[in-house]
Length: 451
View 1 (spheres, one colour):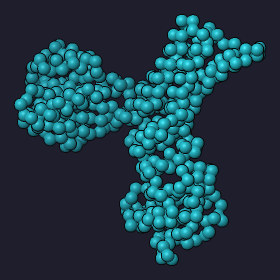
View 2: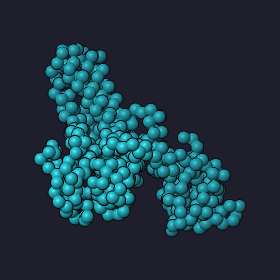
View 3: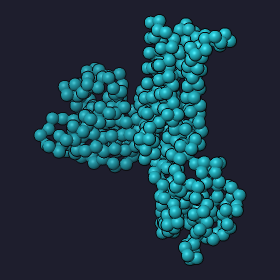
View 4: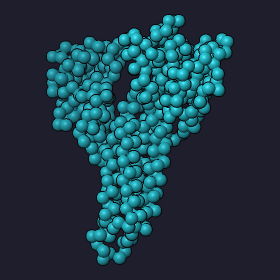
């Protein structure tokens, strides 16, 4: 991290302004070479200065240059931001001059990565920065902001500190048994302390299910035999003609996707190929894809026809999906009834038709009810929101379960330290107290260049 990096921090294109960001110990020296205005070495930190970017005394653009000196910056390094006129040619020319004068083009997310490595933010806060940028809904924005501001990190640190205190107390008991003013922890005293931490982890895991829904949305697979109205259902929910709708069976041969927002939660709708036995090679590929989509989905909406008797294949599919979130949507209620609803062994049955969006309100309400969307907390968004973090909490909980097993089996206190320390390490990985370089590469590779 000895080199100085630069990148365009705004979307490249036609606009009022563009921002080019520079970070590193040579930031001021490099920008001062191409800036016609005040000597940037002599200005106060966190000040803005008017002038021109020049190339061999040829003016490139009229700019405002913001100077922010270490350590009170985003990366804890010297940072300069050049506010220039928006436009591809102008912005790229300024970036080119910076590169020619000693900067290196930043990698995706490298500014935030430096903020983490320099101790400005922890790993949860770093991940939340990316989530905040990509927020699609207000709930997702609030969830991400809670991560950025450190609310989630504070919760993890509080739980970790309780374990560190237990760990330190046990080690003092072992190393300095003569200290009479230190509480001697036996299995009996340790157990309620571990149970309290377990309770906190259980609460965190339970509430983080909400976090996953807020962040990732709900993947909804629309399935059923050909011509039951899956594509019409998708189009009506999206209020646009996304999927081709015809009376010809097998029209949908590949996956068609779209998104809607329901109670502040994104529904990722996936219209699958009609499930049926077919000799058509292309259609068969689509059917196989549909089966894979069903396996990965959070919710399956099985579409049936009101004016047709239910088939054995549809009954088999309902049975196959009994362990998943399933809604049976009976379409075309404007036609003559032929289906026997009593044959359907599913708690969530909705009748309607896809002719009008108003006819789908009951379906939407059933989704809200099934995922308790109205119960998702709207004032406290202190949730973990990604699989990495949640997996580490599960591992930490498993370590504490081993501690409790050891206590119940009368294992010596010093042997319990192995699992207690393992739990502490897992929690440390969440906030980045310990990490592997490959993990950082994975986290930051999806960031934009200028963040």
